[in-house]
Image 1 (cartoon, helix red, strand yellow):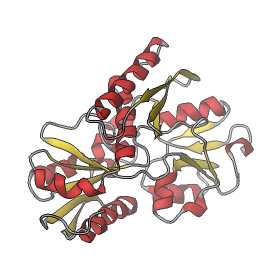
Image 2 (cartoon, helix red, strand yellow; image 1 turned 90 degrees about the vertical axis):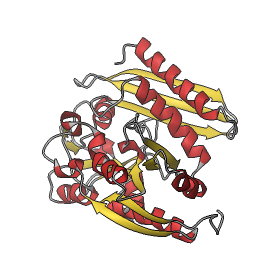
Image 3 (tube, one colour; image 1 turned 30 degrees about the vertical axis):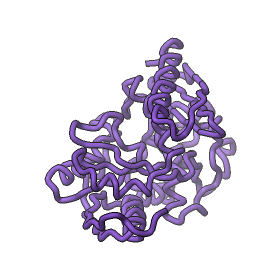
Image 4 (cartoon, one colour; image 1 turned 120 degrees about the vertical axis):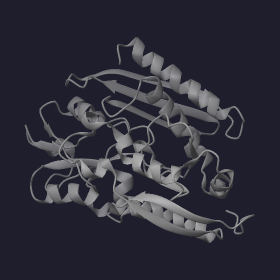
Length: 312
């Protein structure tokens, strides 16, 4: 990472006020300050943070976590917004760009429980908490006998509900627990063959207004090419499937030695087992100008294979 920017900017980061969102914004703030920029935070509460009594799929999807931040960008109160990429809609509104995708944390799902070390240890009919349709479908495929109950709220709220005994165990993103120093709460990390992650899980994305080339330039040193390529393919699957919170879709890509591997799964939200799985590889040179177009095409081909199996 370069230590001196071409132009020092004064930047404001729009962020949700949950502990995890603030950690993410402060992480970006520190990196930008190390590059010589002046950076402050603008904390905000979004609709997604306020509506906790219904699942996201029933109240407008994950876009509820970003709309107020986009208004702050549009009005000039902030220059950039830091998001968990899995919360970012597949298509941004006109005038906004995903200007940077940072190096990914662990993309996998984590099992958290006060009494059971593994999902397999649960007794018949045990209660597991998650509000993710993707996790619900994958959990039912692993343990059809379990009772899956909704679990909303920020990370601390979810852990508190577990500790109060409302659930026998809960499934959370490993990345959030690790970022907040809560890795000791993890009893087991699911292999991607058990619980395929959501598109973009574990990655941070930075959104800006399209016309601000100076902000995009300031963010360039923070970008991670490998992560960006992988999440491009993942998000292409979701976009091609009409992906939203109301669709139990998983997509996970890895790039290694010039080959991008993409796995995806789609399930029936009514509770039937997984209906469709697809996997494909594509040779891609990381810094080829066409790399992201190739990753998009790979995602679209995997989505087409899912649809051929009855998905969507």
